[in-house]
Structure formats: structure tokens, C-alpha cells
Image (cartoon, rainbow, N blue to C red; front, side):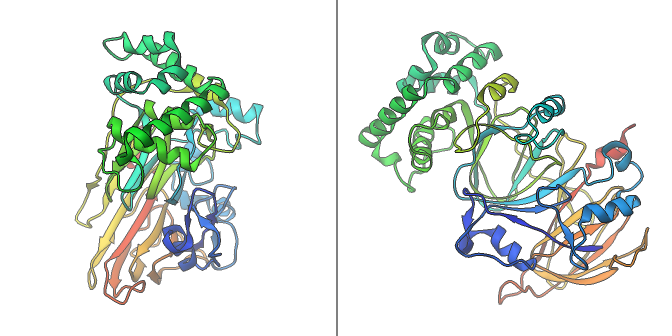
Length: 434
């Protein structure tokens, strides 16, 4: 095992120090924190934008892997190269992230070649999010009837979409990718002055006709028109001045996940995280195509041209317990990664079976002991046994089984269970011909 130091990102949409799990974990990982800054993301991996380093000597994990490629196992380097094929994160979201998508592999290569500063990677970025708290997000295009209802009941939305494109949705009995693309593109490319005026009228109307939808006490069911109207008020407060993302939310599924529930997002699917805290894993890329709810560069034409115009609710996963260890696995249809979690009660122990690829472990809660049960490789930096506590991040080479024991928790005065989150190469990858 390699104990790691991992960096945090202080994006504007993050939570303040007192309410951010990212801040707490970053501090427990050995980093200084600034109580005046928002804490948005904790990055664990080899991506150059925020690379993890060895606690021992500050060497980047990427450099160590390049010197010890066998730590990735036999198959991983052949397919993905000499680096981790995934990036593990914790997110603390207070303010909506941008309306965005992530390009597929072919588009990523094209965008990176044309605009390397805007799109720093030539890799795709499918991702998965597991809720640590109540979590709210927009993801994928909402069902056809729901969108028809919004266009009928929200005249300000229909006005920005335009009569012809709106009729393509309203006049259809079932979902049409062509009509959906025309309507969404019409909205996203609508004259900014018109968008600003329509949003202003919409927000004024909600305040006067639906005051119960304004404020944090709104209890409308996610995805209903009432919930979307309440969301429009929130988004306009966060991004005032006529941001088209306020209206584009009516096109998307509004999801609320409970702790332990997960969604996955393939490339070219529109989404925006709204509120809450999650474990997130993705293919190793930092490419984002933005088109709303952001002061950053908007690549609206590319986003609208590249999206998958498919309507319907995303699948919600709860993970599967795969063996007697109690390991719960969230397995998306992407070969680069899966998310794993293990909970060990105080005084208990569990054996974490070896993976054919590399693992990253994060101790999110509690404390205990981790011990390797066999040593497929031996270098001076690798540790075979160590005490672990909240904030520890460990790189575990391929083929290394672990014994995990839980002692009294260090993050509260009470005894608490040990909770570990892990990223690993999707086990299905090793069961196929590559």
C-alpha cells in the first residue's frame, strides 16, 4: 500500500469549510485548509491537473507507477497505458454546476486537437456518482410527456424555444430525437436579450402566483412542474441576469438521490449537479462542454451538436454485495472503473479480496488497521501494515488482498464504523477478451 496526499479544488460552487466533507477529508489527509474558501472537490488519482503524491517523499503517484508498471497488473497497461484509467473524487456541492456534457472518445480527440487549452484531454469522460447525503441533480432528457407539460404550462419557456420547434414536441405522440434536438438547440441558441426577458417574467410570475414554491421550504416532488418552477427560482438566484440554464432545466430529469443511491452518466448526456455530497468516479479526463449556469466559456454549438437526444429516467443503482467480505460494488457499463464501498463495525474485521487491477481506497469515516495478506510486489515505498483513519487515501497495487479491522472512530467521541470507498477497474474488463 502507498499512503497518498491528495489535493482539493476550491471551485465557486463548493461548500464552505464548516459544511464541506471535501474540506474535512482534505484536512484529515494532511492538507492545510482555508476557512474562507469554498471546498468543492477532492481529487484522487494521476490526472495532471491535481495529481496525488506519495506521503513518504512527495513523488507523484504517476511517476511511481511509471517506474513500477506491474502495480497496474498485466491487462490494464495494455489497454489504458501506464497510468490509472480512472479518477476518484469527493464532491461537496452548494451551488449548481454548469449545464454540461462530456465528449465521447472521438469528439474528445477532435476537441483536444483543436482547442487543447479548453479541452485538456483526448479521452472520454463517462462518470458515476454515489450519494453521501441527500443529493439533487439534473441528468438526461426528461420523458416526452413531462417536457410537453412544461412547454404547455410555462409560456416563457415556449417563447424561447419558438413556435415551430415547440410544436415539434407538442404535436408528437412519442419522443422524437430530431424534434428534441431542434427544440433544445433553439432554446440554447435563443437571443440572450429574449432569454433574459423571459426569465425575468417567469420568476416574477412564480413569486406572484406560486409563493409556496419560493424558498428552501418547498417540498414538491422532484421532476414535477412545481419542483421545476421552484428550481428555476433557485437557479436564477444563483446565476442572475438571464442565464439560459434556468430554462434548460425544464428539459432535463430532476433527480433526488438518498445516501447510497447512484447514477451513471455516459458521454454526451446533459447534466448538472445541484446540491449535496457524492463520491464520483470517471474515466481519467477533465473535459467539460458547458452551455449554461456558468461564467466560464460556453461551447453551446458543440454541446447541442454532440448530445444524445434520448428521453427517459436514468437508472438508479444501489450497488450489489459481491462476497462474504460485505464489499458493495456499483458497476457502470464502462470498463475503466467501478466504485466499491466497505463498512466494518467497531471491533470487526473484513478481508478485501485482491483485484486484477489497481485500487484507490479512501477512508471516509472511522479508524482501524489495514494489512496486506500477500505481497505481489515489493519496493521500499510500499507499506504492508498501517493504522488508518478518516482522510487516509491508499494506492493498492494489483493482486493485493487486504485485511481491514475497525477500532474506535477518531472523527467523533463515539465509536463509529469504518467506512471505506474505493475505485477499481471494472471487474467486467478482466472477464473479456481485450
